[in-house]
Length: 481
Image 1 (cartoon, rainbow, N blue to C red):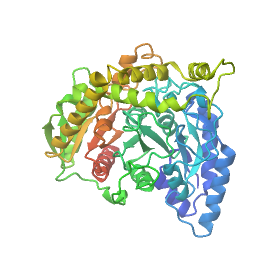
Image 2 (cartoon, rainbow, N blue to C red; image 1 turned 45 degrees about the vertical axis):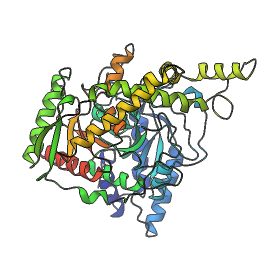
Image 3 (tube, rainbow, N blue to C red; image 1 turned 90 degrees about the horizontal axis):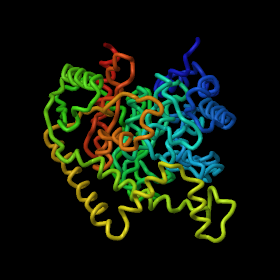
């Protein structure tokens, strides 16, 4: 029997592998071939280690033949290039880390490895996760497989593009202000940002430590539930992880929404939203109503401050986190320097790209003497108000529905000369990171031109079961329509 390996989900792949209909080596080889054929145009991957992936696949086949049944045994994944995978490059798509090989596994990777996953390679991203289009990579610009004149979103654009191009069964992304959900919306896949503290950040190259979260990017909500369950849980290597139970998320996947109250935050349905996105949202709300959901209006009054707050806190934390990249211990070091101070400056000048430099400068400024109270401290106070807005809203509803992005995917080069316009791509997503809650983007009704649109489902802290339930019901009904 012939299979379209490139279109398989995690759940479908597992059924085929467990049933003996195919081997992991066959599945992995098909994906490697797909990457060879499609990726020269898409450029979803920075590096692919076909030999290592095939060796892992053969080991998985041997383990399965011996009775092994890991949750992800033999299933090939793509990994965003800022998560450490032992023996593979971890460049963060930056010249500063070109040639660096990870000496250990991030905790999320170690848990995927223990579940039997195969690692295909490293997906492209905006340098150090700073961007909304994957045009800020030091190595290449990734294209959206749905329309290659358009961006795949960012900063996890390579992970989303790999899925849309059939170059992985699932991928990992990270989300600091929308970097999983926005590219998922642009490329027509599912992307989940877990609650802060749900998945360990150990082994993740930090951008903004109080905002960063690792999450799955998948072809279905069921797959997101599977990967989330594997990666979640307390980790002694990350003190921000919380000791809360990790349920079997797949048991939350039901196909009706009877008794569920869904809030529509009025601040997210703004005049500047693209008409096609608005039409998609209106249709999505009616679909949820038809599934039995009760729709209620809610308000998140401090939303208007979210982008300003986000870009103060995120850049401040970035300026501190990226200070470690100085040419002393690892990564690029300038060839000519008169003294250590000169070496630090030249190394960072040569290694960092324009967007990273911009954010380091902004962050250093808001933390500087005389401006700390005026900017950073005030931003943290407003962040508290944003979190309280969500807490109040969840008293009257179970989850929130909102667009993931104000527009469909924009064209390559369209926003690169206007950083503020690019930053506004995060206007609907950054609030979830500031509040620390969970949120997911699932494919909604496309635009008349066939471009994907993402429906964002936001839940309270550790409410992943709830948003997975809603997303699964929506996905199943939309698929039947």
